[in-house]
Image (cartoon, rainbow, N blue to C red):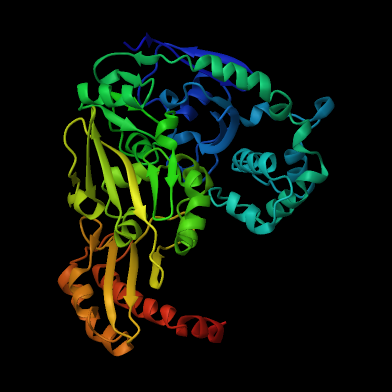
Length: 488
């Protein structure tokens, strides 16, 4: 029998916090600004895009504390049990001076109006703690989730490049106090389930993965929240009620990655950041796509399982995973079943998931030797933007130059992520030539009837899908690289 607590406990800067009355939709940003009067974190977009509300959240991983930059505007207080929240107010240098990151920003004129500056400072602080001498490319990646409308970024990047000349992480309070903080967080993780409130104001924080399975089976109408990168917007933009809620982002059993010589298994709570090194090593063709998924803060929060489970037709991971032949493990209580990922999506807003059943993991076969694979994301902004469409292409060409297998999957082209089976059939058995590709592209109209919306028109989506198949052909035959060099 699992013991039950009625309190959420976490560290805020240097103070232990215990809360027994928390609404499921209370965001960290609102709580910081309205309840704690910590107003350094700003609300710019209220959807996790601008980074003005960035804070660090520390969590225990293998007895060490990992600090992630997150956007407080869409992070719920109910998800913070057993963590350490660090806001810009907690930064300090020696002898009452500014923190090295802050001083670098001052000296290099990285702040003008100052509205976005606290979030930028916190993103750079997180970077400085894990990589005190970052390259320009690493700095730019760390700042993907921060928008600045004043300085034009150049002064900010110069500040980031000079941070370590002002001080080293070993002297920072987070480093010096890490053992004390670690022991405090360990004490908070006492093996008890947390339950607060009732009805649609109920919060449940399971004690373990098995406890979560039992709780969700008994409460199938509850909302599962992992990274809240989607659900957060339901609250801040659409004013939707989301309770009762089961928060699962703390479950380390759901943050596992298992791989072998033939496949990689991501459990549902693995964040994009958690997965990044494994993706780069096992699926290098997806490395560029991974860097374009939102910004650093969202990659730290968003989960692979959540991107699949919510069934969005424009999720970035389903198209490549479908093309690679991924399978889902679904769980209800103690019962598990496996299905093909492409069969999980039934219709818009409808997935093959029974009441009380959840996505436990996704298993992705490694790409066999000799096969060609690529994924292309089309969006209005290169970084930190939702796809207008995302296409994944996988093909095997035999020694005779004939297409022996083709798998093509798209997001943003239909009500669900979907394979282009008519296009695939037009390619298989034909020579891998531009003539074959030209003959096959008309089949896209049989596979998809895209819609027009704020991101793209139906005509644009259809034409772009056709052109992406041509691009894939050029890339697989080496002509795409030659054309890029010629254009450059």
